[in-house]
Length: 328
Length: 229
Image (cartoon, rainbow over all chains, first blue to last red; front, side, top):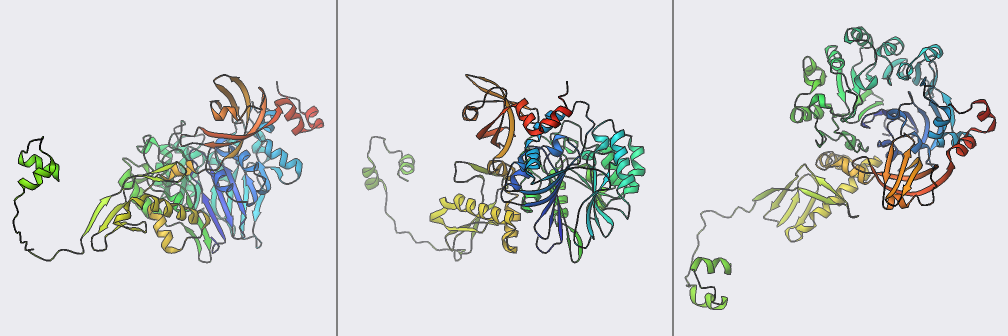
């Protein structure tokens, strides 16, 4: 890792999202922390870290659930936590503060700042400002107008020389991603949004948005046993039609998953990361690194493709026009 | 051998083994000519399945069936791809040696210190074991907050901060002895392979919900933002 200026790990946490950006000085930037029983706390708690930023796209448990467990470890130096104000009608601030007791205690002690996530913020940039992690959505009025938590979910972009590299869509509408996240070029990775089941509109509406985003890879962070019918088959197929490489962290029943099926390939383990305790990893974690030669994905795409061919009965990502995409 | 011989000659069961040996085996001079020299390079391959012991009573299933190669010349057994090789006489050591290799490489992988050769070995063997089960078994306990909502002779009922409710018994319940009903607590929790609470320890009572909220918010904030009804 020391050879890289920045490493981005899009974790397999089962149903949920968590990404860890490792800076060359050893510090971390974390975007969503996954569910409370996910593997991220276990990895973090094994040694002290300097965590510059934890940014939570929105306050659903599959994105924020592990936060308390991470913050409760006093060895972790956590500079700033960015949280969103959800328009949940049932969100009692007293219950919220009880839920994130460790965060409030850190704030009272003055060891961690807590800020509202809002479009226009820069979460981090390197010394030269070539690398930057920015919030692009929601702005103040987006947040004010939102009627559901997902409508105001944060969208975060990693840029390199002003070009978007990774777009974390959280659970935001795809239209919001297309409108806000792609200034300066097309990203290498679009994460989600909403576990491959974007909110609002039918596939016809998604086509122009996906075409506008035109990411090289669609990363879908999804759990095998999710009860929400994630991801949407037609969304993945549309992404494939638009020549995106589609990879899911875990295999779902749409591709033939059944309980008890072992992992297709343990890429999380190969990358030195823990695997979620439940579900069946498909691609598992995906790693993207920046070194002197540019951006590189980890070397496991081809092995993953072979594992799908041998171990999945009817994979969505291998149908139709996808064959060329997977070897791209 | 004796049993097989007795059966083959129809010897009475009442005869003792010594008499069978002395009376029933004709002695011949036998000369054997081999058609060709013995194949001293013969390697016999078996599949190795089962479990790897982890030394603390736990074990992880092996589902990749790594090949076990018997080297006749060297009288050694090798687990192919694992870098494990032992004399045949010590073959019962193989699972232990495999566990040692697995744990050493797991540590190196986690620490990012594997060299190229070890990384190649790790890449191969991590697909041959139930790595998810291993991650669950070896996960560190994490702090989790909850509220004790019920206690009786059979155990306790707890509402965790994510609003999920668990019924706990045995050691997991007795770890909450010092927590009052209705009180918030934090405790170190380990989850199992099924995502359920496997162990619970180091519980700390934090006080009744209302008191804790007031303490966390501060007086002026509490007045400005009364509890939702």
